[in-house]
Length: 329
Image (cartoon, rainbow, N blue to C red; front, side, top):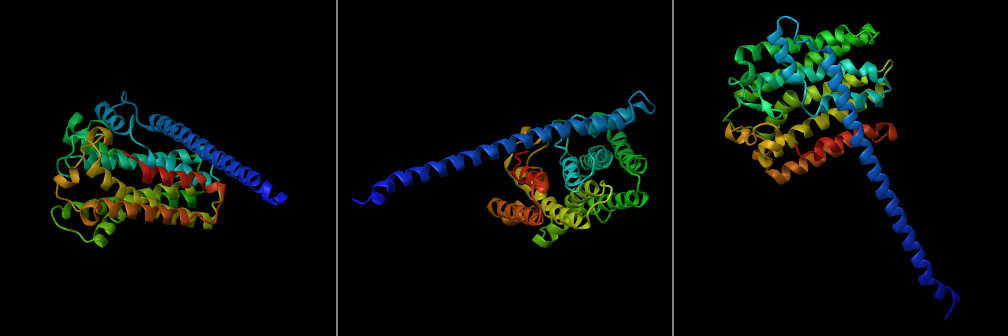
């Protein structure tokens, strides 16, 4: 037997051991990265809660019941996905954390306003939000309407009065982005289409158009506000953030449709099966659960492709894409 033949099994074993060691290190690195990201989420959610608490009117100031209801509707719950996207995009574009705080809070407040109105009997009529009674159940319909109105105004006030945003042109651009995303060409317009479509089968194209406005517009705005919080954001990075957010915003809604069909009320913190009850077209009713999940995977891939020219500086956005598309609530 030749020496090389005698050594071959030994060399193969060394190679196999090396592969196993590399796989183990890679697995550990991925685990460490996930744990680090999970810790980042918890930290940033807590940060946003403090920012919101500090900038919401005190319940001890008149009109006290309105301010109490505003705080009830905004604080103490929610995934804060929009704020997380603002922080992630802001960090990607080189913004300081404290400069992202109020723009991120403004998007969260607009989102909270939309939920208060969305839950009312004249809209989606839901008694539960974030695991507690909806604002109109807790404070009455009239007060809930005023809560939404006041929150919308507050969101714009936060950006307009932000002393850390020194560039007036950038500040106006951010206000413009938020206004478009929350108005008739964005969130409100999408909600109007949704209301008019109850009981009417929609095509996939019509459904996508509705959700690009209803859900996607504010998610896109959140990421762009984070990007524009940087002193001199790189335009190529801003474009990458925009493309990323368009895909992940629509993916967020498709996941919502899947969860509405599969998850329970306790897990969601809101009434499960509501879309089916109201006979609404969803990605699940049009495509089925399996094809809807495939669409989520495609949109996730598109979001990742938007960041393909960038290295580790885009990792937070990549992990946020995973978080949004793999969530169970």
